[in-house]
Length: 293
Image 1 (tube, rainbow, N blue to C red):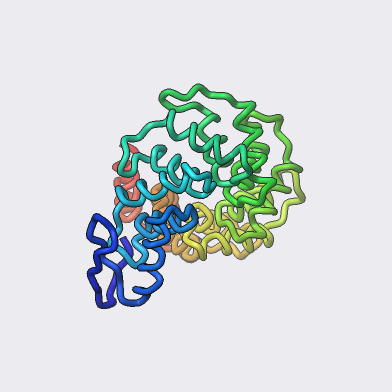
Image 2: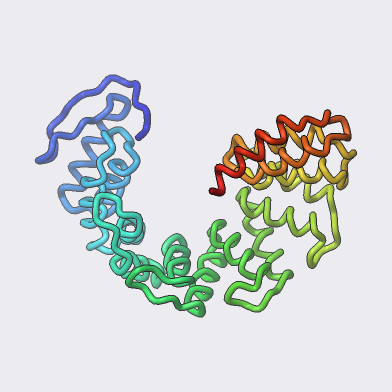
């Protein structure tokens, strides 16, 4: 829920008491009135307000109600949102069959988010939904070609690793680059990895570092760990275990538990500016073992 610090005014404009915040009372009143009169766009916007907690107390039940009303009038964003709430069990019980039904409705009309989520569900299948790799790739590609960065990264990863498609690094590069152009951190890390390893491209540690740093600055723990790896191995930079350890520690703080193993190994070896410390190595190894137990 969003933190709300502004003064509140309680106004009764719906059968359910709605708490509207004083920063935009007039707009909120108008929005509710339009939604109650059947305006599909207003119904979606009101559903979104309840879902996000914009100017109202967050309320998934109310969000679903208004999304559904808007969806029944054909609003694509609302159709997607109904599917999303079924997908993740928000207010309604999680229901994959209902989720794919609503996703497909929006996907067929060009909604790129719906195309992505529908394609993702078809990749391995879900309870009640049979896997369909061919259709999965079709819809993921539609979403990616429609400009959705998450889909561009996803389909790029599939091509890079030969998942449900023939491995094709050239296509992986193209899709990663499209997502990187939108500042998508996972694609920055994935493209950086290709330049780091030199798989399908000329190895370029400087470009790998640049991309990793872009992703790391957005909190991507894999990219942060990969920067540590560059310093650990002296790839494109002067080998420095102190700097490597700093990035591994940051990666762990960002949520990368594998960085604990890297820290344990560094302190066990020592060198390149880092004092060997078996006690620390054992502590990091113990922490790592606890995360994988």
